[in-house]
Length: 300
Ligand code: GUN
Image 1 (cartoon, rainbow, N blue to C red):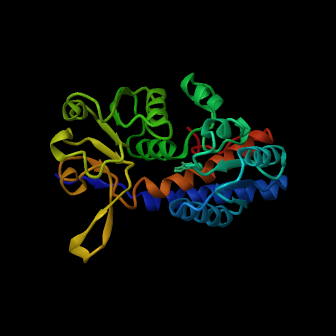
Image 2: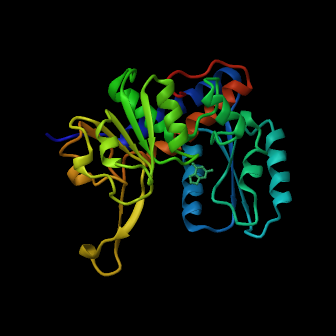
């Protein structure tokens, strides 16, 4: 058997197209343009790449993009003051502070300073609590993207056995909450789980988000299961030449694809969905702030 390869790149393009169409409608019917403010503190190279991509795709969707770049030694109070200004700015509907922050900053305090209504990352403690209690929340982008792919593939997820590997606040925990909300039977496994292969073998849905290159092997996977690989790991690739590297996920793709029913590749799977869902969240936040109906199929 050979798995269906889930094309995250194409799906993300479709989401961006739907967001763009809704943005155009908001503009035409209500004279409102959604705005996303992204704050980057310091010069982490990976964060710089992400922030550039977010800005470009925001503009391509017809929204306004506001980038704020602060030096690494910015006092926390200055960052909090900027967040306060963005919270009060009516042109801004989404506020995202790129993580990780420099070590002298208190990440939780910074995240919780963002207005929950504008928290397009869904990291604010109020949104975490709302998601956990089934209330209307802003939902973290990567798990939202995974959920959209799963719903697209299966329709109704009710009663399916789901195993999430990884317990991070950004992916693992919110992913488990979303799957639970869709009536899956959910297990959160992690690097310390006893008999991880045995636990994963039960799953109709596996979401791997541990950050360990190619850890999930074909023997762990139930034949026909759907495998969503959130991992993005850079490993040496001597076969490409000295000093060369390549990207791999948390799943051993080549072998797993022979057993799974469907699987996301790395790159080109979950990755592109994250920014597409950030744009969807910005649109959702804008509609909620203005008391307008939310576009269908772009939220959890
Ligand atoms: N750094 C890595 N992933 C993310 C994310 O989803 N949101 C933010 N704000 N920072 C990140």
